[in-house]
Length: 191
Image 1 (cartoon, rainbow, N blue to C red):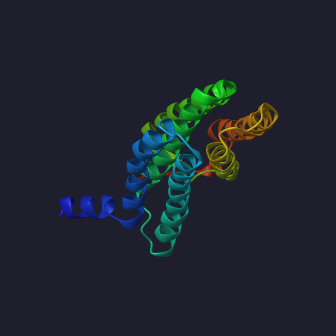
Image 2 (cartoon, one colour):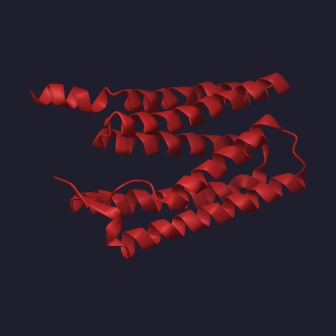
Image 3 (cartoon, one colour):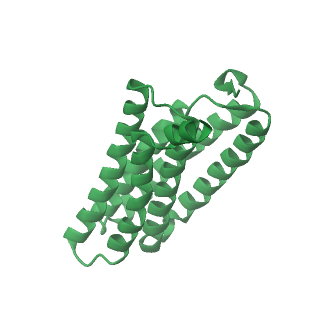
C-alpha cells in the first residue's frame, strides 16, 4: 500500500516534467559550449525556452488537477535552480563579469538550502516560492536567454543585465531571509 502511494507521489505529470527539465540540462550545455554559429545559439536558447515553458506548465497542471506533492515541491525548484546555475556558469565562461551573479546565486541558494533544512527538521516548510523569488527566476531566465541568443552582446548590455540580475537576486534573497527569520505565516506544518 505504501509503495503505491509513493509511486503516486513521484510519478505525476508535473514531476515528470520537472525530471524532463533536468534531462535538458546536459543537452543545453553540450550545444551551448560547442556552438559555432548563430543557429547553435538559437537552438540552445530554444532548449532553455522549452525548459521555462515546462516549468510554467507543470505548476499549472499540479494546481489544476490537484497533483501537488511534497516530491514536486522539492523537485520543481531543484530543477529550476540547477538549470539556472548551469546557465549562469556556461555564460560566465564567455562573459567573465557574470561571476558576480554566480556568487550571489550560490549565496542565496545556499542560505535557502540550509534554512529550509533546519525548518524541515522542525516539521515546517515554506508554502511555496515567494513572489520576489518567482520574479527573480523569471528575470534571470529572460535576461540570460537573451545572452544565449545574442552571444556578441556589447559590454554595456552585459553590464546592464548583470546589474538588473544582481538587484533581483538581492531582493529575492532579502525576502527569503525575512520569511525564514521574521514571517512565520509563510510556513506550513508537515504531518
